[in-house]
Image 1 (cartoon, rainbow, N blue to C red):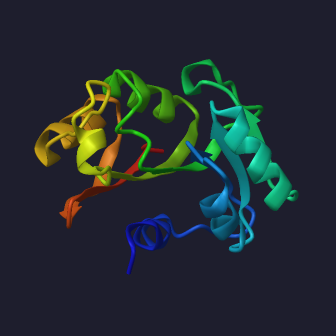
Image 2: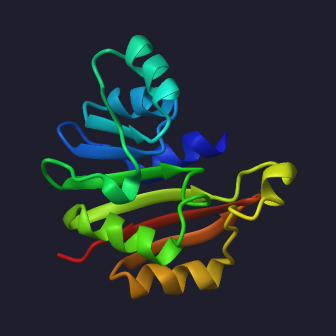
Length: 162
């Protein structure tokens, strides 16, 4: 099973849930998550990707914004972050922001580390070690349910305590 499918399975989206697809790109994973009946908001700072997403998936809300500047109209039950938290710096601030936009009991499902070798060489790329990322999650306030490597990816399921 490919990493994006594994992450959606870890997320376990439910009908009616509000889910943020952080770094949604052209919206393909947003669409797959919305098939569960969840209300998905795709967020990306690259407008040209969102143009394609809106064209392909007109029933899904797509928002152009930098994550740190984004203020949702209401908290989310879940944040889905596939191959994006490697690029949002600083990582501790990103996790604190995710924590803030989740309802109590809300969850973060994330996969990090799937970039190709060229991307891994870029200064902006963040490739955390498993134990270091688990510490960052806990410091941000999360209860860590899963933090494990699968192939080259680090998979996370963490929950904001109730």
